[in-house]
Image 1: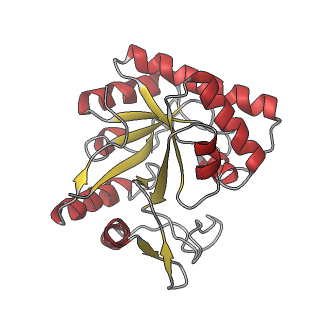
Image 2: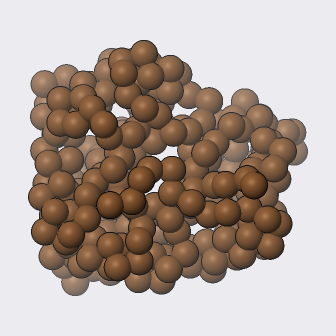
Length: 255
């Protein structure tokens, strides 16, 4: 029986500013990438999300990013290696503490936004993130963009890696994500998105923005929690996958 993990970026509300519907998403996904306070999220909100995730049996990952609250972590940055390594260690450590208090644990790391995109192809920043993870907890799994050089770089350094696809993002013909600056980069139709991901899981391909088929080998699928259509997309995606005999299961072990 085919299995697949569904993940979402959660814990991103900040004070009075609400982002997404964590409670609803935690009824659907099997893994939660929880903000660590640098791109989004405040400690009280993060702790609340972690507690709900534990109740629902959802596995936790540290969603680390650049120090960029104003830009939601989606602005390109070029910190020194010393800064980036320390920032990633700091974020993982903070989430580990909150997770312990919530009765759960951090099982993996998924970088966020601009950091995620940069380390997919930037060897130096990738090495910094890898070094930070190894310095904190070598058992943590790294989630990386399917098809990116980061996967082999991290595995060569001794990290376990899981390749990721994005349900609500458009792809280029060579398997890269279409820039958010381009029209059509973010997808909103739940039925269309679910159909694309079913084909990806069963056939290993996704239709690119120019109509060609891109090969994607992924073990986890992300639905961005900050999209206004996130819950509807995730719900239809899970339903369609299960209707076609797939099992939704976290790639990392539960507590």
